[in-house]
Image 1 (cartoon, rainbow, N blue to C red):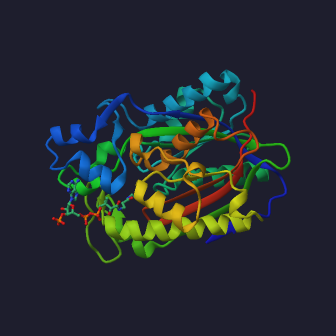
Image 2: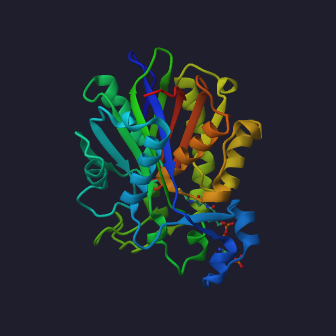
Length: 335
Ligand SMILES: CC(C)(COP(=O)(O)OP(=O)(O)OC[C@H]1O[C@@H](n2cnc3c(N)ncnc32)[C@H](O)[C@@H]1OP(=O)(O)O)[C@@H](O)C(=O)NCCC(=O)NCCS
């Protein structure tokens, strides 16, 4: 497991954009579409009320481009000046290749390298850690780190337990050098491949180590993922805070992966955090996987919960089974 906080150059997020498709699908809408479920069941088990569905002709690259357009709208065209690397964290790329990041690079005509990164729901935090390493080492100066998912295209409509959880969306952050004291203070990155069987999807004719062929759609053992999630959310949080040389009471906002309100609440109780220090919007967007932390963080910046200099804890988990956590001091730049 990687755990690092020994940083000499300060790098961090300086801008954040977000995008969700316009179609809102409520729990009742799912029932109307033939899913044997109810608003009461979904809300009581997950806290989810609605999620966004991408149009049939809208793919992860379109959502990613939407999030970058939001960056431009908020910060001006200069926000992209000098971007020399594009990373798209996604489990739902438009194609196996070319990489979705190349489609984003081409759309904005960036003079940049581009690659996709697959680390399931923690993908965006892994992308931020890669972007931090690139910018701290000097290999890159300015990285566009995107988390984007069109998960509703890979739902198994015969599995009512899993399909009600997911939604579509994207976030886009800029990572570069920041003034001393700001930026990333720690990263915790871990995986336990023993849990691969609990959450997976086929890619071509892929198999698990035991030889079993995977499903063509998302397949999940919800109970096992739930137990893993609650455990790892609080252990990774504690490790990231400790690595940053801080204590939990110094963290102003805790931004967990938005998978299920019960998981967020269980982690919150373990960590003894008051609800006002925990950002949650899973009720309106469901689980948007690699996009979820960025979408939640953007909302909390917009409503004033996150301010310049706020110390934040980002923590996430997902297929792999994989987890990631980071402490970051927010610094929004004028471009
Ligand atoms: C998926 C999850 C909400 C299911 O909750 P659960 O309490 O484990 O539910 P179960 O699968 O045991 O099902 C309980 C009952 O509800 C029923 N049920 C399942 N899905 C349903 C649905 N959508 N609507 C109505 N009833 C449903 C089951 O058939 C079962 O009925 P039974 O008791 O008569 O057999 C929960 O396990 C979970 O959130 N896991 C974590 C998943 C996650 O976050 N994944 C993303 C990781 S990035």
